[in-house]
Length: 237
Ligand SMILES: O=P(O)(O)OC[C@H](O)CO
Ligand SMILES: [Mg+2]
Image (cartoon, rainbow, N blue to C red; front, side):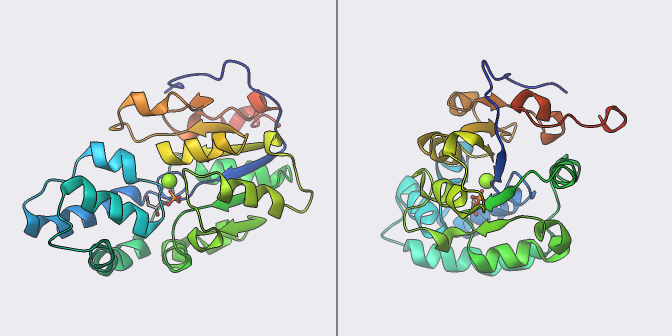
């Protein structure tokens, strides 16, 4: 498996900031399943057009976008849609698994003392549920920022700028590399003045990947040396 698109002129970075849902954890399918379940009584089929618009947004903003898209605001409020979705998701989150390549990459960055942070639009409660089986791995991050950390969520740059300022050695934005699966997340990272590595779901229309600095099929394909980081030992690649 190779990259969908290599970076034209990657610049050296010193810090890595990770999105969580759909990038570190395989939780995006859970959102898709739960949203279809809540939509069922309205006779609507969840599709990748709205998935591309709402993925990566804070919960209420995402549900607002969905209710608007299906024009069902006269039948259900975004708040009620979110409440019904949470009832389903809270149970599913406990089974969240790591995406391919995550354990190796985080182990490598930790071994080389590259500072890392998480910048997720997920709520803190969602974060705690999703990471139940992965506490040790998530303890390695220098900072964890959740949806509550900022007023304006992705695609605004605030959560990525806050992550950069939370690192002990306060890197400039251009020294931070953002890892994302969602179009709004890539826009947020770009607006923050950061380079971005996108690992999109294969079902996402490629037109939503154009803004990313690099596009990968899997985090397993990430090459740290392209960004001025130590390469993986040859035996682990
Ligand atoms: O992708 P994240 O980690 O910012 O979280 C996004 C939402 O929780 C679901 O799309
Ligand atoms: Mg994501």
